[in-house]
View 1 (spheres, rainbow, N blue to C red):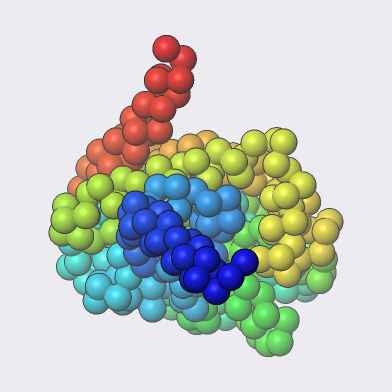
View 2 (tube, rainbow, N blue to C red):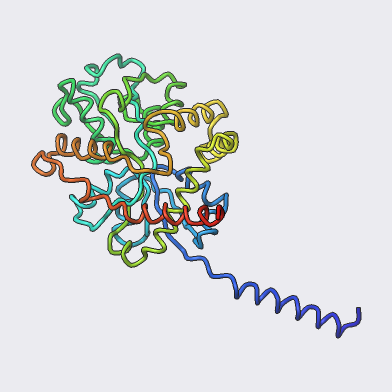
Length: 337
């Protein structure tokens, strides 16, 4: 090939590459904060190219605690938050932020995990119990469980904020004076292996509970409704992939990688999440009864709303989720014609 022909071919390749790039729409960036760790559905959506297929480039940051997560969302440093949805309620009621929940994801698989010498809830009298934040989500669960046995926070035991679930197990290993905490799989399974005792599950002790879900600032959602709908659609598809039995081994491998788990703990976590009430929710559906229980507990334990919980609609708007589901159904309908 002579030099002039080489230049011509090179120019042609560059032109075609530029033309292809020009025809591909740029991905829209969406900033997500989560707790604890990186939600597996979001990892799936990234690895399977679901975000890109919906025109999104997702920047995901795992936060060390719920206070930092709420602050990031309130300040506009993130667009979307994934955490226990009671955090959204706290943002509205305590910080007066204009927040709405737009999708579920998972219920509560928390167990009350305690030091090995603790044999009953009564044994927690006079002890230190550790939480993420003292007035939201799993701390409220903990207070309710102990109150059912006559123990009141501040009077009969001390609550100490430590951080997200994995951090609390580390703290209990290192500080024997930390008597217990609410922990979920895989952390609770690792605690069992370490010899910690289990005083019962939230499902048995307080009933259904809407835990992990997606929430946003309401003005941002109004201004970016298409972007939010595409994001939710990608998450729904990821949840379907996550719960598809044919992907079991890949999901277990992801659990091992993301949470640095041994194979048997990862496999047990998977089984619990896909088969137990309170695990991953099909299509990331929002559990209305579980959320009513969230509000009921906050009213009872924290004294919110004068003890009378408000309607679910104050915090949860299903319209974006419903539109995302409808958008996912459209290609299927076309393909069957």
